[in-house]
Image (tube, rainbow, N blue to C red):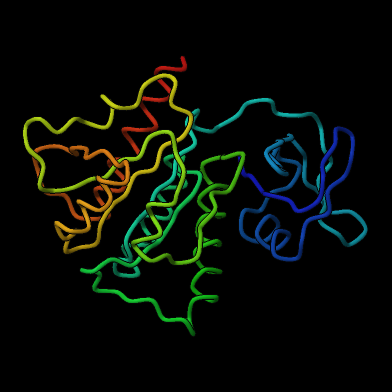
Length: 242
């Protein structure tokens, strides 16, 4: 079943007029015609039937879909800037794995640096990736992506549980699932760049309330660590809710 996010409110028995871009995708790419689709506006989803009418591509709204495809814990992924193709892969998978917010940041060992003149265009592309991935996996909301932050700003982000994936772990370092208790409503997971964090950076986060967590006995690439951590958070939270 195909899904589209809308900028206009939806109601049972109503009609939705596709945007030009949506109409092109539905009519010419997906070739949808009288096939049930899912429309979502501000978290509310509805089943609808698309058709062409008077030169427009519309959808007749049937009934509300009360199923919610979201993780029960508000999940924030803070990911250091890594190479473009890898960062964009993480964005796509973060949407699929239930992240609610993605915060890109610059730390000392980042190979990729922020380019102010490209930031607006870059963020627009990131939002497009998140929207398309959210539609594909039937999310009720599109994850938000912030402007690029400086490492020191991470200390100011509020969450019930603050996790730092740090490769210099030992056998006493807890796993993510051990710290994600039932009363946790929000969690932030911080993943460093390709070169990892410096000891000073790690100590700075730990002293401001972050817990070191283990992602296993192997050293993971930044993009793998982000996806692994989000997977554990999503599974742990959803299993505890069921």
